Image (cartoon, rainbow, N blue to C red; front, side, top):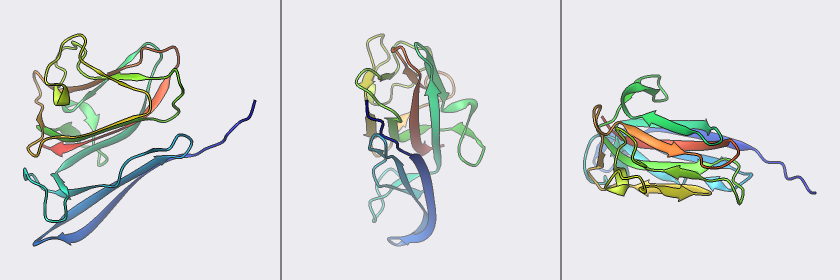
Length: 184
């Protein structure tokens, strides 16, 4: 049996630059898990709360969540995007009101590892791109999933739509890179 070694890495490059006619903070996410080619696309965010792309094609956001989390075998993971203890890179509790970008990549995918991402009839789960929260409402992810929301974003709140939910139906732990960006 051959062994292939690889390195997983994540970087967040923050620069200050003029974007079109406005000056603001531009955030470019780049992450790679070279062992499985799970790469965050070169997506550009600008600091703001607007509902249209700026002149550079950046998505206006003012908060971000970027973590590598492990979902245990047969277990679930809930990220509270508004009103909980999950935090942004600056250590501030998330308080999203709109999610505009969602990305999940399995760090060590195999033919049998997968995550279910979606409401799956979970209390207080955000509908996001699913549009509903029923028991059969989820996306099966074997490698990666990326969703760019509508210009105004998908609505989340602290009472009825506060959880980004995923479930591991398999028989092995799975580490996943999770990136959420939006406005608060």
